[in-house]
Length: 634
Image (cartoon, rainbow, N blue to C red; front, side, top):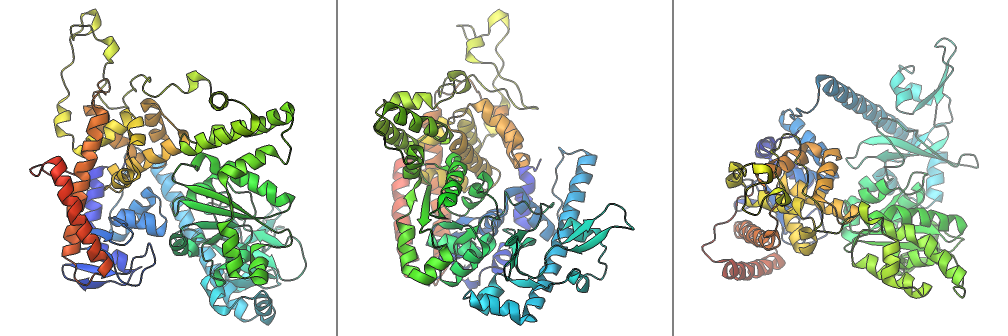
């Protein structure tokens, strides 16, 4: 597990200014540094970095955080990967004491293999790029598709010559087993003496597939002339999985933030051609149907996704699979839409034929998820018989059941009920699991404390006089409660009564998820879990935390909360959590104003924002009491 103390030491050692300077041009402005925000498009700088506080903030879009959050939001790292990356940069070793020596050795072996494979793939990408320059035929093919040298360089396009062992010129040790492990070479025959080795990709335009960190993890190759298969992908390897990766996401990150949505298409060439036409927010699946992993990855960068498909039967089937993959993530704050192009067009041909403005208009007119569910459930049937309406609901029920609770789900249920001429409440009941599988909010029993935490007794086990049944004396209040910070209390309340999170507003959610680790990580995880699973018992949240990939950060905080929290005394939670949030908001305003006042040269918009902040600060102080001390954040 990664202790919170280690995270504090790590962020204190990292030079945040140097880290961000690798991606943003910064100049000193008073006590801080100033630059153009990497999270949204702007012409006047409003992005500030404080070296003293190890904190960044944009007065234009509100992006803020520490070094760990910057890597997560800008470079697409997961939390644990961001911690490992920063630790490596400053020469620290991440403590992960829950692993046995054998597990640590295996994890180290996997990381070493992954690093070796990405180095091999990167070397191959360089080889393919050099071969493209030497192939007039391949260059002419790309020009014929309307691509310029600039966009080809942006995506690192290359060419695999029509040779059985073309990679031998880049890898003198052609029998290196890492070439096979990376998916670059195919080996036929098990007997080493009789085996045959040859290049997987031959006479193809090569599209490097990059991770969100920018490492080459695989390739897609397209034939220049007629041939089968038209597209050929790298096989599954320790660094590449088609069901999790998206082509072009590394290149599209900034454009996705600026456009406000991600555009999912079906081919590599569509992504590259759309980027040249001004639609840099396009990404593509890798020859497979859209998966839940794809959708979840995209929602790390945006709250809006547009799927683009051909209007034929195959496109409709692909749209249904994308719809099903999106349902668990379709919260009230996210949008998913579906664009169906004329059967004769793909996105590339549509833009070339009709123009960029027509494509923009088509995107704006894309079908919302709520409409797509109803239309897919109807399946082009007229609903003039009871049988047709019953069939529509039979198709729709599993889709509705997959939706998280919220206003969007309610609206979809009402639309379906109206068209099927049934009661909406009854339809919602039919879409729910059996009551035993989903108890009503507030009726759940107290969760079991995680391993290592002190156990608690439920209110039902106590006698009316305040002692316990069977003569057992009442346990004294846990001394750790006096050490709980306001963020500890907020985390404990949310874990104990998940419905309190839903009562907070979007601004409150953003404030809590933006807190330093480990608390911010926990709040972001709770937000994701509730969006995916709906109302969840506290005990189920503990189990989900134990199974999560970020468990090394989540579990220590969960155990800390369980150690000082009276799980059976939730009556004051609903009032206490909003008060904690308001205190944190006042503290955040103070930090933001401190950055603003200490950074000369900010844009006029930023200064106007500062005046608004001052007014908010005064209002908060009046509401909370001017003498209220700011809460601790760690």
